[in-house]
Amino acid sequence: MRTATAALAARIEARTPAHRDRAVDGLRALALLAVPTGHWLLGGFTLDSGGGLHNASPLTVFGGFAPVSWVLQMLGVFFLVGGYSSYLSYRRRQGPVRAWVTGRLARLGRPVLGVTAVWALLLPVLHYGFGVPTVTLRTASTLVVQPLWFVGVYAVITALTPYCVRASRRLGVWAAAPLLGSVAMVDLLRYGPFAESVPSWVGLLNLLPGWMFAYQLGVSWADGRLGRRAAWVLCAGGAVLFAVLLLAFHYPASMVGVPGVSRTNSHPPSLLVLALAAAQSGAAILLRDQLTRLLRRPALWAPVVIVNLSAMTILCWHQTAMLAAAVPAAHLGEVAGLTTAPDSAGWILARLAWLPLFAGLLVLIARFARPLETPWDRTGPARRVAAGLLAAGFAVFALAA
Image (cartoon, rainbow, N blue to C red; front, side, top):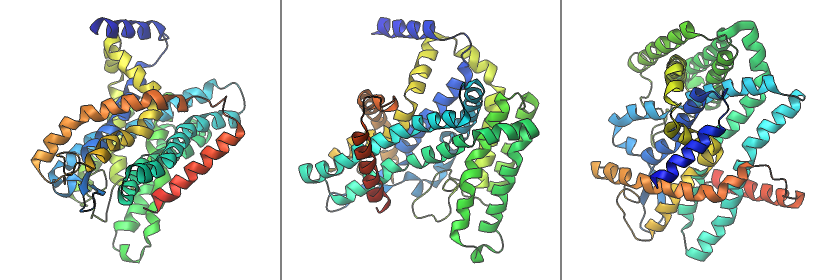
């Protein structure tokens, strides 16, 4: 086994181009793996008297664990390297801008269409064939859709890459400043002295600039307009702003939503999210050289390559992996760490023990789902329309949950 692993690592190392930016790939892999880890650790279930599963979170009881979400919330890093990579791809394009944008969006859309279409077929099979309660299916649908909002936002921002490039050329790293200011202004409206008279939908105005902030930083980084001095300012300034928002302005400590708590940092992003993204982005840029040297080791580089090749599969299917363990367990009753309420230290230990199973199930699912990331050249128009209709039906069911 060890010999086979070493041989695989050697083959990947041999096929890696000399110009490949290992640090950027390593940062992307780290941010990618933080998504399933966070959802698997902070997403629990409760079991009702009818055997149905409901969403629950250990943060409802263990509020002191909120700092864990500061580490696992790495979407800022993901958008940073996304902007970096998109800039390089945009500069290397051979055809028109529209073709480049269409190609990038197709790469993001295929896996999303695939997972939602598959789940649309699974729902009746699970309900009528295996007797899975409707409430469990609604819970499962909500979890499957939960990470897909991110793909939608990322797709919109990717389509805006040409404008990000122009902004970087004109303003350099300062191109991200208006995005930060926009989020700060919306937060002032949401949480300031006149918050009671501000409609709730105003927070949605943060959705695009909030996540575009780190993406714009990534574009400026790739454009050579964000160096180490600016990175130090981002890292220190982001950390100070983060502390001030927590201690002086009483922002929620958790970077993820907590059931029963009306105010959240991530949906849509608050200024606290941007402060964390700034600190993480600055640190990532400062550690680039060290990370590059570290990833010259084939044993470390090989997992990074594998994770990057399966990026969309990990994002789209990791909740399915957890559900593949929890839904059957619900038929057995209360199973520690799976179907019991996340309200004790025992649950935390049990959930940690389940993580290897979730990871193994994700690897198994990825073997069948990975082709959905590749172009559907052999899929005719009729099948594509059918997949689209199935995905739309699943979306309606999930959003109505």
